[in-house]
Amino acid sequence: MSNNTANIDSRELDKFDLLAKEWWDPHGKLKTLHHINPVRLGYIDNAVALTGKSVLDLGCGGGLLTEAMTEKGARVTGLDASNTSIEVARWHQQQTGKEIEYVVNTAEQFAQHKQTAFDVITCMELVEHVPDVESLLSACSKMLKPGGHLILSTINRNLKAYIATVLGAEYLLGLLPKGTHDYKKFVRPSELDQWLRKAGLSILDIAGMCYIPIINVCTITDNPEINYIMHAKLENL
Image (tube, rainbow, N blue to C red; front, top):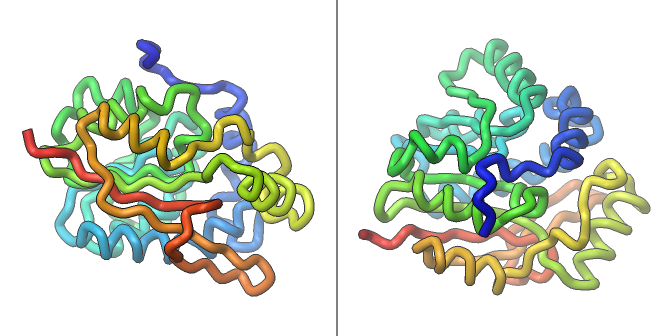
């Protein structure tokens, strides 16, 4: 595990800076996120009952999930390393009037003064974009209250996932901008399990997320072969 408290790949940050203005366009380059966001929200709320919970939305981007969790009654902080994305999130927050704290920072740096601060941390489609996943998960563990919950989603690393998410979604169907994903950074559930256990977290559930682009429908499945979402809990100290 790296001691680098930044844990930022500048090339990844540049990608999302360029896409920042697309966050809230349901027909733009990030339109897929608008289709899957209600499904992610449903999974999270079913797992932890968001009302009244203190939540950190890690890698919040423009705030799609952040605002949705606020609407469910959670007290949410949105954290992202992209200043441009946070500017967009704050702009949209001004339009909606929702009470959300948005912060430009990394998990590692934020954890230095936010230990045991949150009931729930969400980490959607972030682990495949950071250099050191183990460091990220360790920071999450520090920021969770004892018995707190971590919900994360990412992409499995296998041939089927590569065909579906890189060749299919980016190059054939144009669902995402080309170059969004680097196959080498995809993460197998077994790898996450190992790192989570090191950080004192245990997996309670893992499920697949199936997206059908022709009809823009996303569903939760029992097959985590491609896209998957995971619920882990911090062991009581």
